[in-house]
Structure formats: structure tokens, C-alpha cells
Image (cartoon, rainbow, N blue to C red):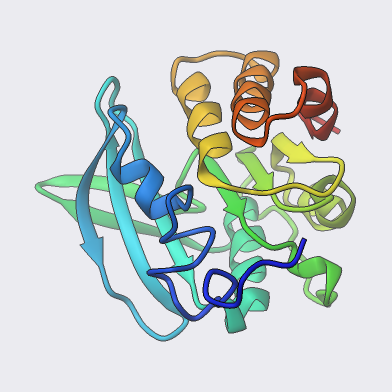
Length: 214
């Protein structure tokens, strides 16, 4: 669905629907009692902002990156290279080393499905034999992301079968189930329950939309 220009502007992270708005990643997770903001970084014109959160109930960290919308293709490439282990990095915070990109156990993409607009010529073969989990909250992500995700050997923990609004509450509740060591089914139910509540659709419809596995 079309959205007002202000919240649909991919260069304006403070007002963007998926980052600065009330249900955007930055705002929603900052207001969550389950996560505490540890540090906020300004990176560059491509990666406009990075947020480091720590779970208040477990020893998990969440690193959230806000890409400039005009670099969505690079964002997609970085996502697949992280899933494959081809790109790895770390953050250092108060003596703690935090694995990001391919060093993370779970890699997530949330926002517009750029693969509906462009194709990627790159190959994303798994390089280290590790099998990471992946969450892809974007329109029809199971169809559009499947080819490249299969190359990475990542496990599709959660993705979508149809058009959706990939706002932060779905990711938030899926992550809560994940860090509680729940299985795929519980992660899917948690995500679908959140989506149903905020989008005011039935649980059945939300579970049809949000699925796990191949």
C-alpha cells in the first residue's frame, strides 16, 4: 500500500516507517522492556545508523543496522554474505566481543523486498560450513529470497508468503521466542500473534503469511 512520502523516505531514518516511526526498529526496541540500548553509532552514507541492544533477560545482543534506502541492493548483498559467512565482523563493547554479520547466530532482514525490483548476479555459497538462522520480514520473501538463501545454507527461521507490513513488533516477538530457546513452531506462533494483534487480522491469516522452513 502507498504510504505518505515522509515515512516512505528511505533517506530519512528519523521518520522512516521501518526505523524511526513508532513501530520502526529503533523506536520499538528502545521502548521495549526486554531490550536495553547500549550504544548508538553513526557509520556512513550507506549504513546510516547502527544500534546495539542487549537483552534484559538473557545474554543476547542485537545489532540493528539502518541502511540508506538508495543502497537497498547493497543491503541485500550484505545480508546474503552474512548468511553465508563470507562477511564477518565484530563489535567491542566494555571488554565484550560481539559477533556480527557472519559471526552472528541469527541474521535478519526487515523492510522493503528489493528483490522485487532488481536481481542479483552474485553467488552466495556458504564458505565455512556453519548453518545460521535467518529471518526475512519483507513482502513475499519466501519466493524472492529462496534462491540466494539456499546457496548460503542458512535456515529460514521465519519469512513471508505474501504481502506484509514488516514492522518491528513481529521481529521483536520472534526474537523473544528465539532467545528463550523455543523451536521454529514457537517462533512462528510468537511472530504471527504479534502480527495479528497489530494488523488486526486473524491468527490463521497471520500464520499463513509467516512461515518457517522451506
